Image 1: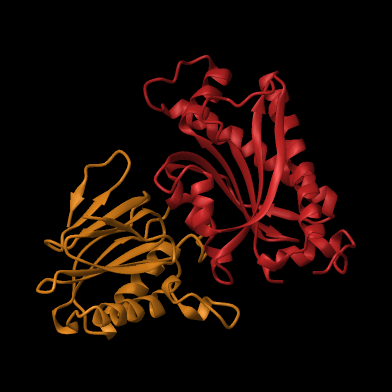
Image 2: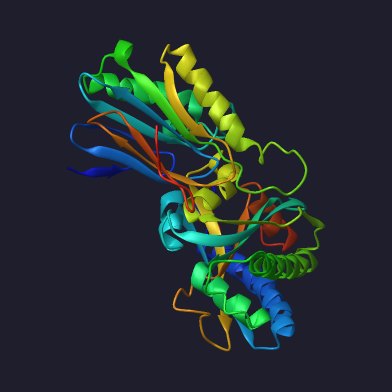
Length: 210
Length: 161
């Protein structure tokens, strides 16, 4: 399926898939932090690669990101992304450390673990909902320019297209963004061949054609 | 003087005094060509090594090393550059994540670098400098005054190659 040509109906289905995954991720983080965590109503839209960079604040912006490659019933990449200010706020919430002086090894491992939990619980919910086995790779953390991190994550999609369906949910703590950054996201980037499998699993493959 | 920005899987050519730049190369490779007499510089932001990976009939030439490098050469020549004077520089091709295993996705940076070198070699264009590999992102800017390529990375000294 040409990923740029999904119908509105199918985009809505993906939004629901995203709500289920992100909702479970929020619940997990909430019990870890003992705070109310919400994942903002997900955005699901086809975006040209260069627009995705702008969406996360520009290709040169420093972000922290946990990456997981998914194989199994569907394949694709997942990314948990935080701007540096959001990450500092998260580290403060988790450890009480001020986190003003760069990122310590402990601070980074907090983000690594938060990303791990968020992605893991997202995928658990997704796997239950779709009835697929999903096998995630070992989560890997990087702190670098958004362009460098995202372009790598888009390389499989790049084989077919210059546009990716970004399935995005934004993180809110006690109803607000973590910091002025407001730049914490969980991205699901299915490989192009996986969309049909999602729709087939949900029995809506033939619905809402263009 | 303008700075011309090249996005992912895009390329471009500029003349003196403008510069050409691309932001946040990770596993992607930035290839630059420079004609020192005409002071014309070209750059392409390559995402994948080979058009053999492309699915579907229409593809963007600037995305794949084996089509992007010849395409950039063609653009340089159309702008008046002389192929015999062209010198190439490369940056990028990092491995941004490590998640165990040795799958081909993880090694995409190294494969991109190899494919760009192979494409340049087959066109007879010498590579005079490179800053490739590692595990960090890079922003590059080619100066058409001198052909110098500036490489910037977070938490590292600026490099001029």
